[in-house]
Length: 456
Ligand code: TRP
Image (cartoon, rainbow, N blue to C red; front, side, top):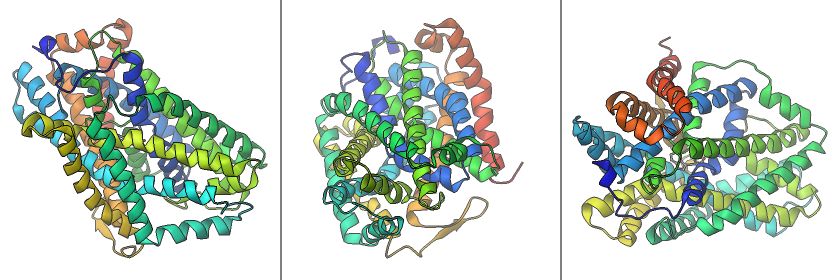
């Protein structure tokens, strides 16, 4: 039984380390790069409200379920699902849930790394003084120059992938923990500074209004908000499950999950508060797309006291935030190769990393030489580039689908006794969790899916 299981990959030294690592996974480009730009594209207010609802009603319960499954299974998501299904005398086909997660993580990392590369190149652009006194047009041109150059994107993407492979090869535990303890609070502090700068633009309230005043949203917007709740909390693909598998039995999953979700949400909202006032103050377009933070924040750095230094720091920290997220995206795949194929961690990381790098070429090219090559899938989306397609399929389809099955497994397949053992430290919270994950979460995911394809 699971009580005797131990992870062959080791265990977190203590609870704080787990929370840091999971927060490191959750807080990343999703909060600072993606949240503002999809909020801008989907009209603000209502989108943010739907996103917050999804965090509370879908994300949080699934996070608890994922950590719980990981801690009981103590292996990569694929083997965890096989082991848990066996414990409950259920069909081993549940392993396909693990497989979908491994594939989703790998696909996400392939484009995530390219964007992390943008952040790295911006460390040098800011450091070199390129943004001093910059105008909105100038910032836009500097961004366009970068993304229209496949060689540059490729170079940064390659560097970032190598960095990720190195940490994963050394083992997540020995990797970035110490750095994270220091860097995450620093990133938080810097975001606050930019928010304060945004207050001086005279357009702060426009930003606030954009973020929090309800407007309209369509089914696709709702799907994107839900997909992002999964993406930003690193849910639905087994990343948090794997991290949970390195967690010892005597720690509260409930408390940890709430802390992680809270930290993640606060960072995203701060990023929104930092960026939108700058957007409005400079007559920019909220729906500018994936370049949004790269076209707005440099304007702030170019006009504030000590902006060059702050800018360098900010993009460095953003790179670190991306780094701690990236490692969690391939950890499930690496853990699997180590368990089943007898690879050592170094070999496994190089294989998976190399493959991810290769798929990443598609994203590199989709901002330049493939920019006009687009794809449409009936009912779902039209005219998306390679990058947009990957992002759409993973964040809006694969992660929610993964989350749906995780909820079903935790609430309907696993025996109540097992779930109680893991989560019942707070009996009241447990009952709320059980109710949400049994009824609300799965139904909500299905309803959003149906709404997005126009079936309801
Ligand atoms: N949550 C991270 C971010 O917001 C990205 C990420 C890391 C992720 N691991 C994940 C997304 C697993 C989905 C699944 O930047």
